[in-house]
Structures are given as C-alpha cells and as structure tokens.
Length: 166
Length: 302
Ligand SMILES: C[S@@+](CC[C@H](N)C(=O)[O-])C[C@H]1O[C@@H](n2cnc3c(N)ncnc32)[C@H](O)[C@@H]1O
Image 1 (tube, rainbow over the protein chains, first blue to last red):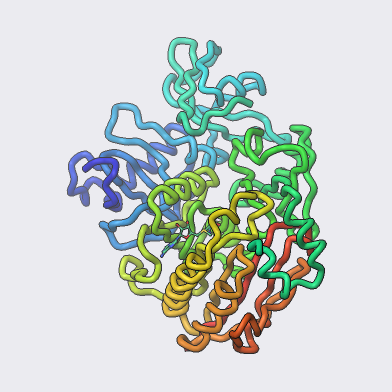
Image 2: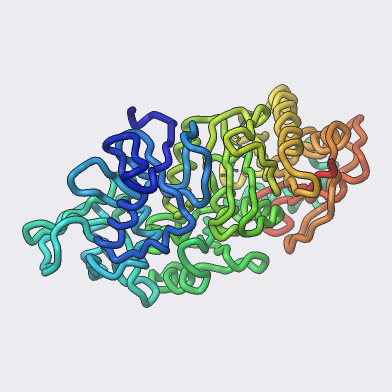
C-alpha cells in the first residue's frame, strides 16, 4: 500500500478485532492522545479513525462502510507504524486546546522562528519527544504546531508547505 | 464589441458598472468558526495591526484594505480563509444545519466547502466532489488547514456522481458552484476576458446543465439546491435554470440577501425563460462594490 492509495480502512476497535498486523487500533489511538497530551477519548467520541497507506491515520466525523475507496476522509491526524507516533500540525491546531500536558508555550519571537522551520535551543524539563507548541494569540495560549524536543533543542517539524516567515 | 458590452442591455447604470469593473478588489477574509470566534479573530487582527473592516451583511467577513489574506498569525492558526465577498454568498443561501448531509459538487479549491463545514459546526456529513486532481489537492490542504473533519472528498465527474459509497442516502442540501466564464472575477483577474469565447460559453452551459440535473436528482424531496456562478452570461445562468426546471422535479424559490442585487432576467437575445428565474439574484460589481455573481435557490419537489 503506498501513500497514493485511495483505500481507507477503519481502524479496528481493539486488538481482538485486528486483521492487519501493524495497523493501530482505535483504542491505541485514543490511549496515545490521552497518555501523551491528556486529550481525553471523549474529544473523539463522534469521530472514526481510518488508515490510508501504511501508517497515516485520518479522523472523520461520523462513519462509513470500510474499506472505502475515496480521495479524502476527514483530516490526517497521526503518523503510526513508527517507534514514536507523530501528530500532524492540523490535528494539534484542531484538537490541541484539549491538551493538558506536553505542551510548550513559546514567546512571539520563538513562535516566529518555529513557524519559519528553525530549530532552537530551549529549556524544557518534561518528557522528550513530540510536543504541542502553543503561543499567545488574542489573549489565550493557542496550539500552533508540533515540535520535537531532544537534547535542549526544540526542532520545528512544521511541514514545508505550512512554513511562514512572519 | 468587448465582452462586457454584450451585457449592457441588462444593466441599469452602465457607466458605474464599467467603472467598477476596472477597480481592483481589496483582499477579504472569512473567519473560520471551526477554530475560533469572530470576536477573537477580530482581536487577533487588531493585535497584528491589520486594518480589517467587518462587512455589513456578513459579520464573519472582513475586508483587508492594506494587505493580502495570508502571512499573519490568525491566518497561520487556521482562523482565517481568504475569500472574496460574493464567494461567501452561496453557502449562506444553502444554509446547511448541523447534522445534515450536504454535497458540494464543484468544490475545489474549497472556499465554499470549508464555509459549509463551519455552518454545519463540522458535524453531519459533507461530500465534496471535483474532477480536477490538482485542484482537489488544494481543497484537501485548505480543509485540513481549517480543521474540517466532516468532509469526504471524491474525484469524479459530478454528472455521474455515485451515492454508493454513502449508502445511497440522498442529500439534504447541495451547492452547485459550477465552472463558468468568470467575467465577474474581472476585478481580481483582469485577463479573464482574453480567454472568453462564445463557443466556450455554449460548451460550459452544457456541462452546467448536466451538473445541476444530477444535483437535483441526488437531493431528497423538499431539499435545497443552490446554483451559483461568477458570470453575467444568461446562457450560463437563467438558461441553465430554465432548462433544468423543465427537465427535473424542482422549483425556484425566493431567498433573502442583505446585498443589493437585480432579479434574474426572463429575456435574452431571442430566448425567453420561465418567469420563476426572476427569483434568482444578479450581483453586479457596482451595486455593492464587489465582484460579480449569480445565485439561485431551488427546492426539490420530487
Ligand atoms: C467555480 S470552481 C469552484 C470553486 C469552489 N466552489 C470554491 O468555492 O472554492 C468550479 C470547479 O468545478 C470543477 N469542475 C468542472 N467540471 C466538473 C465536473 N464535470 N464535475 C465535477 N467538477 C467539475 C472545476 O475543476 C472547478 O474546480
């Protein structure tokens, strides 16, 4: 299965229903968002999760018969089938306001560097790995994207097409 | 004869019309209420020192007299989408409700799709179709940027749209924002008239009829179909409505619009159209200082 496939398969609910070995389950995806960011499973109550190609997970409001051959089903939220699962910028912007941990608040200046795709040296005393990057907009912290924190450094993993010089 | 001159018989103030067509159009943005509120988007624009004028008729729409739509913080957060005023009309005429099944049958690059999704509170089911692969990529990117999750995208000729993947369920509402001759976009794209030809008008009108017919068939009885274009050509507007009105079970219905408009025309050259096409609205650039547009609302009767 390549990334250009248009076949979407609904994630099995749990391990017991899994037929494709490496496919994530709905339970694992919900647990992952909860464990990593404190985003509760109820946030995705109305959404189904789908895999297209190998590892890309989409969240769709409502349901369809699976599998389905289609060009798009909701939005890509997560990359699985790798050691560290990686949320998308779009998922973080859409659902990240429910996060209670592993979010890092940047200053305006740091946020500008982050959106330009620059890595920066920053102090962070929490877990290493993927973080939700926020910054203040119109008086509140707002989720902006995904950063990868390791060795005193926050890497910007903003996809090329979303980078901006602000 | 220039292309615009052919429409002079339809227009009350030709001088104002011609002058308006020559003025460039400022940028405009629509607030994406899937991710924020109008008030917070307005505050974010003010914070960024971007002058923004709220339009009288649509509180979620702002004219940006000094800048382009992208390249600012609220845009980067997916709070704003660049969309000119008249383009924001038809989704509001469709008036989709949360939980409904809605089809956008000429959807790319998705300005109106994402507006429909926001009006549905990103619930129910929104199906977006386009036959152009490259434009569908742009649609997908826009929908993701704006955080839309209730959207299923198909690439196909809408004239042959299949309800099969969706369990055969007919739509509650359908938006038919067809390809057209686009003279109404002249203030944004002054070159648009260079490609104009009567053969193209005739060919496009055939496609428009086919798409509108399929839209009426795919919508449930009592459901709503909205037809829109950015052309002034009656061949692509009233003539298409007249044709589909005769061929399918549907009728034109009245609708409110807080912008100044003129009724659809019942006569053009040697053609006569059904009286009910006067319920459609023609928006000329000089009426509200916008682009040009055409919009009609239909109810499915069978
Ligand atoms: C006026 S544009 C739509 C603009 C879009 N509604 C928006 O607001 O961003 C018309 C679209 O119809 C598509 N199209 C043309 N013929 C089609 C057909 N037969 N079936 C489906 N889509 C078609 C074109 O590729 C084009 O993207």
